[in-house]
Structure formats: structure tokens, C-alpha cells
Image 1 (cartoon, rainbow, N blue to C red):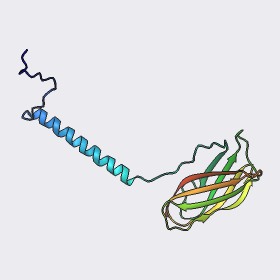
Image 2 (image 1 turned 90 degrees about the vertical axis):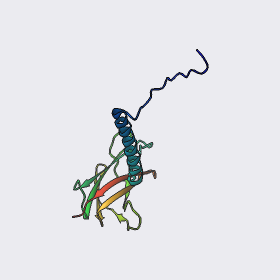
Image 3 (image 1 turned 30 degrees about the vertical axis):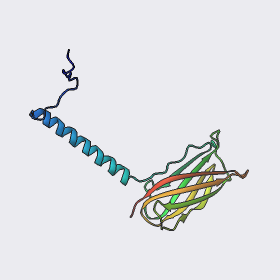
Length: 156
């Protein structure tokens, strides 16, 4: 073999052939769509907080009543359980709801009652949209358990 002989090991794409041109056009369209989709997803996505995995071992759950909250007076049921799964009674709860965007006044929950680690909270939803509810439970020994929950409130 002489030094002037070139070995072509890469497949060639002859765009003069119609099927090769169509394949190239499909790949280019796919890559452009993928680039546009990644920009849209990155730019328009909202940040959603989920309850953090608790290292304290306590379980805090929040249920809205009605299940789909609407603007106006609402009710939350907060359940607090210790690491052994037993209900925690007698905790002092602070409940604060904030919209996910700046400029809105927070709503504060009022504890209406407690039954075996299940706390009923009245809270006013002042506007439809994405909210997050911060729960702080101060236990009888002074420890504070804190969680954040996302809530979507609908307009009437």
C-alpha cells in the first residue's frame, strides 16, 4: 500500500441521494426541537418545594379540606407523629401560608383543636395560585420540628 492511498473508514453521507438528505434533515430538526425544548423547560419551570426528608424521625402530614382549596376560609389538618409512629399531642403549632411569588401578605393559621396528634387549623386563602405552608411544631421538650408543604389554591 502506498502512502498516497487514503483509507475511508467513516461512512459517507452523500446528500445528493434523496434518502440521505431526508435523514440529515430529520436529524437536524430533531436536534433543533431538543434544544428549544430544553430552553423552554429550563426557563419556564417553577420551583416546587417538597417536604424534606426528615432527619429528626418525626412525620408531619398536611391535608387540606376541601382537598382542592379555594379562595376564602380554609381548613388544614396537620398530623404529627414521633419516630416510633405514635401521635404527638400537646405541641405548639405555628402555621404560615405564603404565596410562591413576592409581594403578598402571609396568611396565618389558627389552631382550632387537637385530637391525638391531629391538629385542625383554620387558614384564610386570600388569592388563587401556588402557596407553600410552613409548619413549626414546638414539642414539650423545646425541640422544634419544621416542614414546608406546597398547596395550590383555586379561585372560586
